Amino acid sequence: ARPRIVVTRAIAEPAMDLLRETGDVWRPEPDRQLPAEELHTAVAGADAIVSTLADRVDGALADAAGRRLRVIASVAVGYDNADVRALADRGVVFTNTPGVLTDATADLTFGLLLSVTRRLGEGERLLRARRPWRFHLGFLLGTGLQGKTLGIVGLGQIGQAVARRALAFGMDIAYTGRRRAPADVERELRARHLPFAELLRTADVVSLHCPLTPETRHLIDAEALATMKPAAYLLNTTRGPVVDEAALARALREGVIAGAGLDVFEREPEVEPGLLDLDNVALAPHLGSATVETRTEMALLAARNVVSVLRGEGPITEVKA
Ligand code: GLV
Ligand code: GLV
Image 1 (cartoon, rainbow, N blue to C red):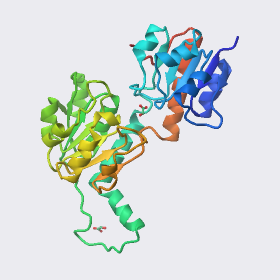
Image 2: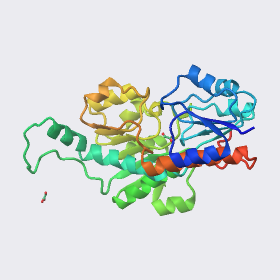
Image 3: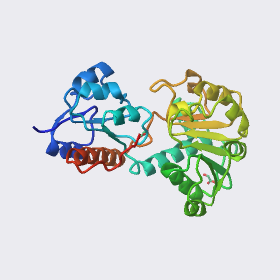
């Protein structure tokens, strides 16, 4: 029998074509986020599932699919929504999409950095409110990046790509992480390794690129924010819960730090209401990898993982438990 492949959300057509060559593909029509109960019904008898970060991928999902299930390919790099251990216990391979979204996410990180330091959102809100304005030398002055220190939390692929952009902007690079980066990476980026607390104390911009794990949940809390310079900015393009969002809103309101750029939120799609009234925060609705090119590459990589596992050739980008 042809394998049954369930795709939880609409993905790029070239990836759908690849899946259709391999099996019978089902996806919700019209495209929508299925509640867990409906998703569990939909996956019954599936050999493969292509999922997103909005799906809870756990033992219950695998059990609902049943004994034929061999692979779940998530169209995302982060996998805090997945219980990889529970899948491994059931013999189900889990894959993600590293690499292909590195540049898009680093670009968006810089977009948020420029937006908040140069007050672009504030300026646009002023224009759209049709308020009077006129060029003068003290109008909407922001903060320059040249000679400032970017402190990267987690110097993985995305952290490195952000550092490369920062070098081009004339910034100095510091980083923190459980492990030292390879010597050639440190050399290329002229990156200094610092303990977390020292990075917070010295950086003019702190940018988060660590995965969400039990260890990094609320890594940036009130205490961490108080350690940062009053003139510093915080960027979060990884996962919302790495930051205590209520504490951040308070810190931004009280001038504990100068500003923030956020692409992710603790309780997506909700945004801490305290943030919405502040001018010193640039906000984006989880757009890090949201380009046509990148989303196509992500979908293709997920589809190739599915095809490869179903053919018995093994996964391409497996996440091991
Ligand atoms: C996006 O947030 C991803 O993890 O791919
Ligand atoms: C600014 O627009 C300048 O000409 O300096």
